[in-house]
Image (cartoon, rainbow, N blue to C red; front, top):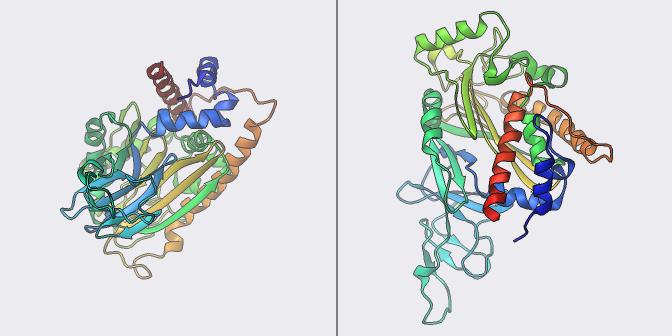
Length: 402
């Protein structure tokens, strides 16, 4: 394994409160390091349990650059596996969702059951032991209907995060959701630039005018609004309705229920509900948004009528695959209770605008004249939190490597 001496030097050169040195946003060595030190060690959001509605339902996706498959077995348990056949390593399941009785490698037809046990390996010698060659499992964490995975041999603690998030998400009844739409974007920018952009609204008023109509674009850390009494009145209403507000946080996650702008009840173009069949009936669906964000690569919003998930998966030193998902109540009928175009318009528009910002940011970072600049402590506090977290995790990984 590489010693990553250059990455070590770059981290040592970083000034507190400033952006990262250039190569950490652009170089192949830094990208390889990020996969091993960050994405293959942390809890990563992969979706909602609603995407695996019955036994045999499976999702094949990539965590960093490592393919995995998450499925619901015959007993209803959700399991995760490395998507790599124990024969010669071929991907067993193609990317995407499927319904399966067994998992069959397309190369030599090695066949596994839904618990990962090897059932059949054609023409293998008599001494071959199929029980010694199951699919390799990955850790699965579940909280209030959301699914996380961790590829590390020893996963970081998950229970404290789950305990903090569950009361906030419980009223949104994610177990009774369904996927209404999914959109995949390719951003020509390093994953850290994608996430820095996603961790601040310093740019929102100028670059996201539609989002700023619904979303409090001038909020500070923990989504404290500047409007006199707006947050206090909202918190009082939520307490009366029995809805948890937070904030709650840990080293790698934050969650809070916060108020949207005055007169706004959903994160949509017009600020109104896009779905008639609500997921939260309290307060006539005027319950703000539960925002939860997890390092390294996700943020989500749960409003009364839908849930929005954003995840970013690095695919190269200067390329990131962003997946956006919208969920609604399972009984909501498309064309009657909601129209996909109205449901997705705000975040789709915002994401397309962010692609331009991130790609422009990457081009500027690649400049011979790039020098890491200081963050705005008020408007970019969550960016600073993200980059400081990255630095701590990276330095810890380097120490373990020796």
